Image 1: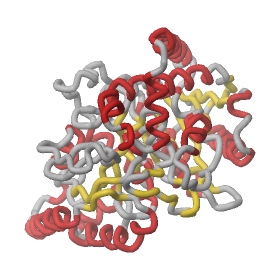
Image 2: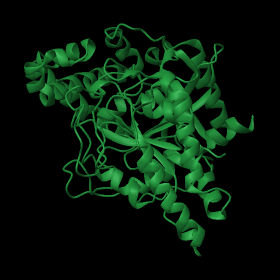
Image 3: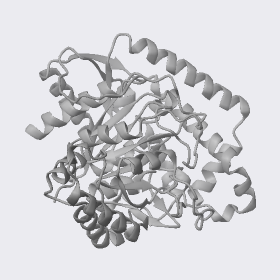
Length: 456
């Protein structure tokens, strides 16, 4: 059985597998693993089987299989703050435990138009405000590589579902690292596109000026496929940008003469030694492939990451203020504390954070005049142990978002790629960041790195 999107595409078109077989295999995995890992809040079993049966009948009589929609018959999971018509969307919260949307989110509509089979809604850190995915209402989402470890969050369910082969791909959201952190900790690929490339309509907000939607997949090629399907200007989304480059990623793996800045400085060097070893080895890979490598001190990103955290708390508090006053007890302890912190921030603090955002964007504009990509770790540590105390996630936020948050506030495309495992068997990852709208370059470099790892 095949678990990658691009392999499944070929086998579906050759008739070697059918949509119903793919969906049944994913549902079997969910049934056998999800009670232990808690990747899903809602499994859309009947809906998925019904559509897969219809698609299987279409496939049998189809005379032009090569021109089938890109995701025809492909099971995809969706983070449970992205609306799916007729299915509850909880946002991992008690406030929406019975909310059923009448419409699909824009990205879900794009997936369905491409033939995807939505297999379920995945678990997340409550309202997406946290990185452990220890949800007090829907269960602790556990790392499939070691269930005593966290999955990371807030898109932990999506990363776990892909890593545990419960789905061929999944959607997550990323405000401070919520796609890339769980992907890195679970050993899969996670892509945060340029801010404004993917529509946010029908997605519960965490922080309006920082939220992104993106794919989580088992490989880089699959991330490119999902991104291409979702990439479309949405005139009804005020955050969707019309100023976009054409996205036609061609994954050749050719990175010769690419100018890659390898991150250095104390901000990076306080990471675990095994993380730094992976950074060094990935640098060598790119150098061997012909890329031009220079060192770049990223200590200045410390203040940028802090500004992202402040903006997240303040904007989340603005969105949830009424609920926080009416039913504070409905929030988990860690989320309630962070929302209250957001309410208590001064307006001048938020203004300085927005000023930092502007300065950081300008600095990266200048940086990308001389460099093509920035290479750095995704997280400074491997997956921490699960704690039953939800307040521990407050302490976990800062170290885990250190290398991801700067690229939410600047809106730059960033991808995390698995790069081996620690001595204890936990996934390690590195991150590639490009200029705005340069997803094609980011994906191609990630593809080259992935190929080099697989060949060794």
